[in-house]
Image 1 (cartoon, helix red, strand yellow):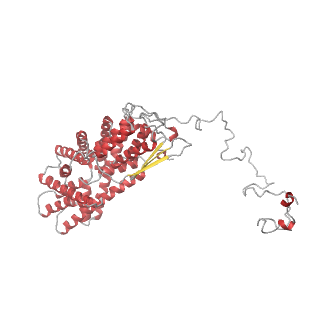
Image 2 (cartoon, one colour):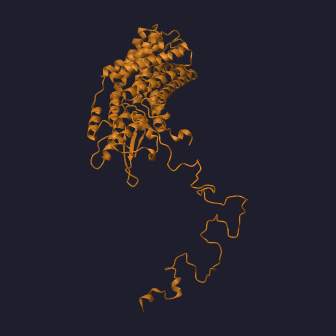
Image 3 (cartoon, helix red, strand yellow):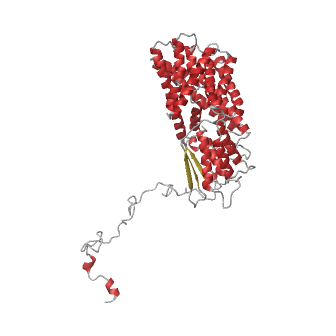
Length: 555
């Protein structure tokens, strides 16, 4: 028997053996007639053979959704279709600040960004991508930990990458996580790195030094190698704070005293000293809690108690002073104005996750302050303390304008010291705070305009002047705006709301707290609006029109 014959089945039974045939085989003896019916592989939505669907006269034949219209031709394409050359790019001014140029390019899709012009000296074989990404993340970490907005952090990270020739980079910033991805080409695997921000500290001197480093990296006339950039970054991290601890405690006391003068409307040395002592005691207690490792929530709770206790003690001693001004002054040193402005700014620029986290942090700090003050006020009212919520209507009936302007400038100066700002910026932010309070006082007391509108306009001027000063000095705008909004913070509305709640007048207390929230939002929105107006209308140092995110236009 040949090999060919072995391959053939020996009988018909072998073909129907269940062990060697498929379970889907046709059983023996069952003949399936072969007809010319419909194919079993057609779709269930196919029109059966012989069924003709009537078409209305003049109708186009049925086709796919991707089939061009009958009247469309490639030669004479209507204007509604995107041209083959693409859409016009946003023009960039080369001498514009790097913040505006990078922010504009971040708003563009990757395919529309202009090709990079590396200004840093590349090593043989191209830049060391992992080291560049690591340097970028370290710079972004310092900026985010210092309180910079998420959009400005992304712009700085993008500037560092482009300065070393990495054009296809996508930075991503959240409240505690930084990440960046670089794809060399469409056929190569992307390189992604991330870094977690675990500690936050207020040091605007360090923030300004990081901005100077990024500015040097983005300057086409300055060559900074990777080793030099790492060395400068290490020096920035090792630098000590410009002000010692005792100076910060003294600044906190002077800030509370200046705030008490703003609230009282007239000079009272007893109120000034009482508010200053209460704030300094609260600062020392907060430092003690921080040394013990307690979270910031409890630090704010403990720091809010001494000013409230001193105000209640003055009321129990029947001293003829405004205890409300003492307590309100102590609250000014604790209100988280910096985090509030940063949170609202992130929300207005489209970083909703980071904005939610920042505002949640502000809420926790505010709840800590409320807990500390309410605890003291509750026991003070129980033991006979005469604290009058109606004093809010009599606080500033006849304010002294010159005294209040001087107090606002002192408040801004001490706030700048607490933020660890450079000494060269303290004078500018002090003047900015005086201008802000002058505008607020003119609108509120002379023009009899609502406090929310007056606060928003004054905060808008703070943001505008701060942006101008930052462009003039090629630095961050935070050192010129955060301390200047100190006189506008809603300390009195917060205190009187808490006092009403402590006296079981919850409805009135909630109304006052809602007013405080409205004032805080007016400050944050005004500062951001002033900054955006300076970018929109001022051509000096401007990158032209910034493309907005598509989701803000409804699609």
